[in-house]
Length: 242
Image 1 (cartoon, rainbow, N blue to C red):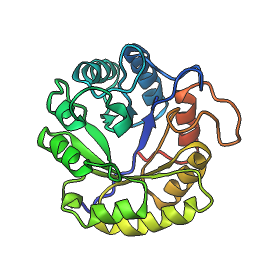
Image 2 (cartoon, helix red, strand yellow):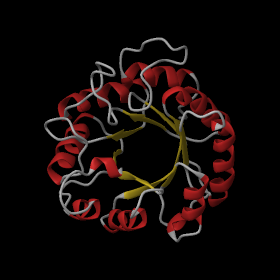
Image 3 (cartoon, rainbow, N blue to C red):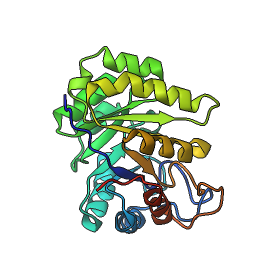
């Protein structure tokens, strides 16, 4: 396990949002590539995207992953990761089988440890040379991950805190659990927890992320134009280390 903490600002460009939630959400590969370029120019050092089908649904299908990852890579020269969330698989077979047939590999992929089959999915990614980001949303998931063989094979610990009254206390407990591994940690929120968790990540000196997947408003609740503006605000709040 690594003892070096790499601190980055990741841009999460689209998630499962549609344009009815924010008009600047990129829902095609070409739009995502343009958005990625703007986000990197604004200060993002890493990207997380949700590939989609032609009709806009999250997808793990080889053709969709290839189209999105290749388009983004043509636009920017930073690591590109994808989701493997259970909701993103709507085809036959299993997500594990989908990963085995990917023709273009992302640099990393998030695996939600509370989801069924997480360790098998992580193994499939690892065997294909895709870095595994362990998504730990709860203390139970974090403990299950710690008790497994996966801390030695995980590239990044991804802590996501939902909007809840005890979000800060939960974040502190999760950080206390995982930081002794020495692995890089990325802490982020979603919705109203996004900006408080970004500030907590900065205070703890760990990586964080920002983008329209997580939030469609600035820290003051005001409207934002796009992902690039969110990145600029995050940089201004100390979320990027050089």
